[in-house]
Length: 178
Image 1 (tube, helix red, strand yellow):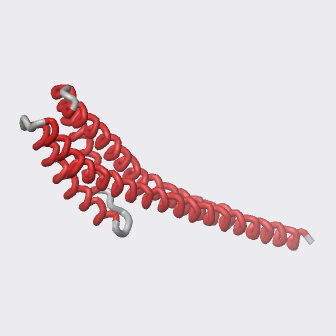
Image 2: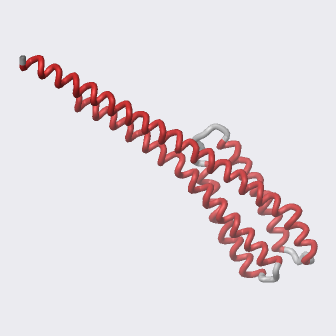
Image 3: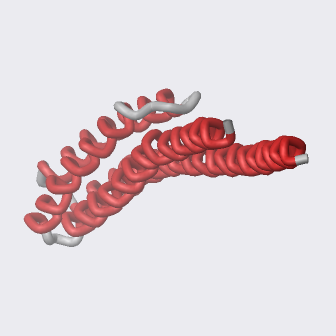
């Protein structure tokens, strides 16, 4: 009985830990990748604005793919309430961001006009996307912490039940010996 109960409780605990790692960790990593690639794209834009067009464009193009992959990973791993809404918000904001960036780097705008577009439209979108990715990241980290607390609670209950069952077994054994 003690062995069977131990197996059930440990299996339950293992499942809880697996859920913590599988569901939320993917979203945390995806959000970190989105934020990092977005920052690199911002650096690429600044390269372009400072006259280093080719290295800036390369940096932007490379990180557009990284961002798109991370965003898709997040969209495919929605596990929390409001997470899907926030991911779709990032998706639409990012599309605007990409169009604005493309407009600045593809054309021969004057430096002043390009700076105005950067500070007036691109930078606010950058900050909004990054902030939303941060919100999703924090939601998933909080859920991981909550699930971790739940797993600890299961382990604590399992330990108490094992002590009770062991005490019961000892008492039954002692009763038979008398």
